[in-house]
Image 1 (cartoon, rainbow, N blue to C red):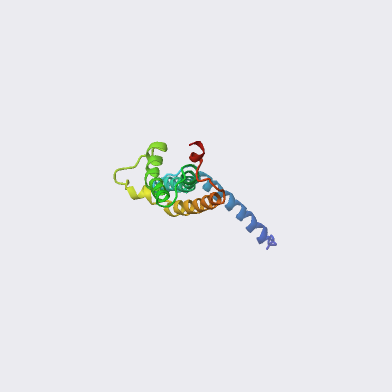
Image 2 (cartoon, rainbow, N blue to C red):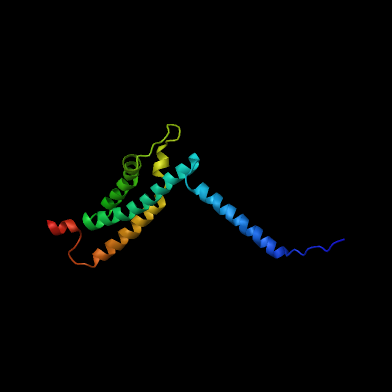
Length: 146
């Protein structure tokens, strides 16, 4: 009987773990390149709409209060116009998403990002209104030109 060769289990295990990590990284790179499922494509669309909704919430507050000088109900109506109309403009005119007849439902366009839109609108609107309150005789940029 010959002597058994000693095998360092820790080194062998580390080598196998490194190989497994490399395989997983290669698989994840291949799968991340393009979404193939309909769910992934829909989630990408909703994610873009969500971040555009966040941006439009902040910008509509800035434009409505700073440039036009809306206060109170007029500012609320301004926000609602951006809230309900601009997502349709983004999805159908700017990005030109194509929705299947079975998949398309108006709530898929309106719902993503309602909370972030309202939250950022309120934060930016209150901040701009408070800042403008301390500038005497200034209510909007348009007032300077008239």
